[in-house]
Image (cartoon, rainbow, N blue to C red; front, side, top):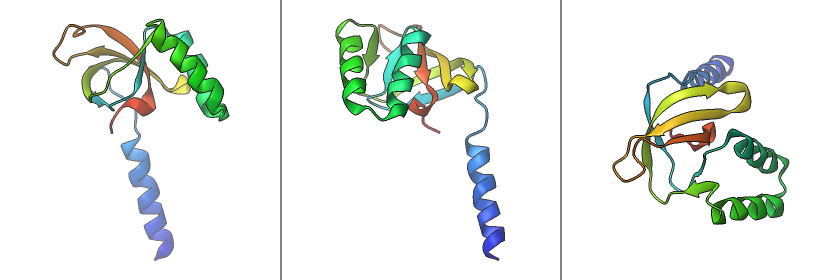
Length: 114
């Protein structure tokens, strides 16, 4: 019985983390970091996953100050334009109302609400 329950939980988790469909509308979590350049996102991801919190904060702050990355306080809606699963990166177009509607961004896939 326990094994059946464990398998059910494993399959449920796998289906929720399935591939992102191009053209799908999704929500980006509040306070997520939005990038305009995939290489800057890749470097941010490396720092995030190595666990060097000080280096991550320093890099992130410098990007935000130079407007090479943005951080929005609210949950915002985007349309998926592309997905690079191996890099854990998603290309999106902002669809929320405002002056940045239609702008294109690169996000860490963990920034999306699922």
